[in-house]
Image (cartoon, rainbow, N blue to C red):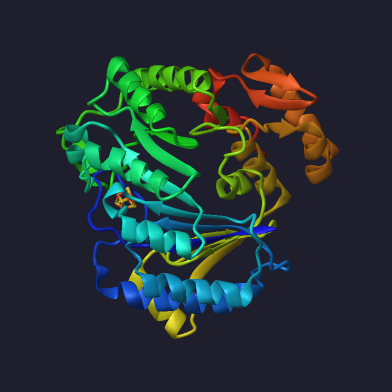
Amino acid sequence: MSGLYIHIPFCKQACSYCDFHFSTNLSIKNEVVLNIIKEIELRHNYFKNKKLSTIYFGGGTPSLLNKSEFEAIFTAINKFFVYDSSIEITIETNPDDISAENLNLWKSIGINRLSIGLQSFNDEELKWMNRAHTAKDSVNSVLLAQEKGFNNITIDLIYGSKFQDLKTWENTLIQAVSLNTQHISSYNLTIENKTALGVNNLKGKEPSVSDDLSSQQFLLMTDFLKQSDFIHYEISNFGKAGFFAKHNSNYWLQKHYLGIGPSAHSFNGVSRQWNLKNNGLYSKAIENKTDFFEKEELSIKDRFNEYVLTRLRTIWGCDTEEIKLLFGETTLLHFLKIAEQKKADFEINNATYTLTNQARLYADGIAADFFLE
Ligand code: SF4
């Protein structure tokens, strides 16, 4: 079974740190939605098996879609794909879009998982991030969603900003856990050059993130959330038992997915492709039936490198039996040779290699040492 990702590239306002593809020009939202529907029709044969295990509305801010836009997208999905009641259907939303009316709409169209971008419980910090909500909105949005019967909710948090020290970060975690959500995703603030934060950082108006403080906050978080019954199953993701994100787990387990909408990525096991990262050009290309994506065929080396990069971030780790099966004996010997040199970074169980909590701080660097050229 496969996953369907739909990228809704619009936001009310630009968060100061955000490097995702979005536009605050909502005047062409309906046009882009119509082209997203056309793309579903054009690409429904991407999978041999039409059964979906997950649908994920990401962005941008998909909670900006109205009832008729959602219904039109679901009509297209239901025409070309099949799924049953076990499907996970997630929508990313911000606290300011959570209302009784929207929650009722999302429930009625089958959405059963909410990913709410809380980010912080500090109003000053939220303002600095240029978020469109307050800390009170954040808390109320989760409570309202729970009251409306959503029982699979994840919240996003950001650590590493200049507003936090270890004590305030611990308080953030205490508040987050007290909301009784089933899942928490928590990301280290990264300063990207093209964002407002990046520009101000380059001008010397904003400090860089302290790697040392971020590392301490990461370790504090992993201990704290573990004690609160969350399982740390991916570097940035913590779920209660039975509530790991199915859609994102599929990415990390090399399952196939079809990405629809501007900038969306797709993967079918042998190639990867990505759509134009410009709303107007994407729409024009779909309408004119010209190329709207780029594609890369993946060599065995590419696939091995991606396998190590993603698996080392997870509790599933690198399984040596699987490496032999997927990439051959020589690649397995290469893996074992490097793993031996780095054995202090690993826990080994049933021939599966996972990183120690400390080593997860450097997961990408460790993975890079395994890469085949
Ligand atoms: S709402 Fe999300 S996608 Fe939009 S600018 Fe903010 S962080 Fe980026």
